[in-house]
Picture 1 (cartoon, rainbow, N blue to C red):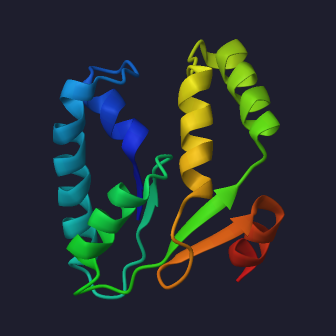
Picture 2: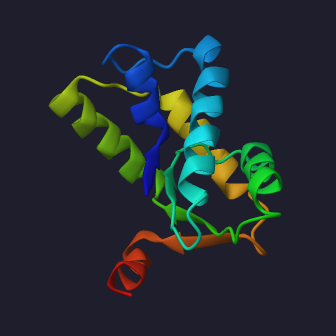
Picture 3: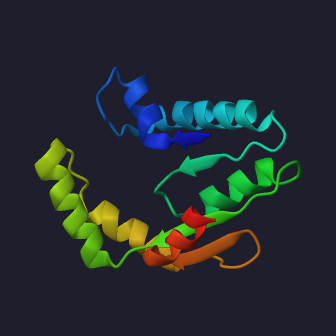
Length: 133
């Protein structure tokens, strides 16, 4: 099952992508509910698409679900310049613009992650080996 945080935001904002800090607790509750439903089926793989790489957020997720589930978090690395280019093309194609400070902060947080145990860091081309498995 695939769960996307941005898609939940769009759904809660009547079809428009809006990042609203006041809405984030509701988004988190909905994501957790979706995960609980998906993982009720033993053997079901769940992919959660979430761009935030703050270790505290990910640790809270692991603490909540790890006692009953085998969790592996994979962070896909992209160089900062590629993130800027992708942001520009996203804006051209969809009109959706992510402030550069947000991108820089997420990139910086990714570099501070506590790698090991449940967290794996791979460079983008390496993801192909997982897709082929």
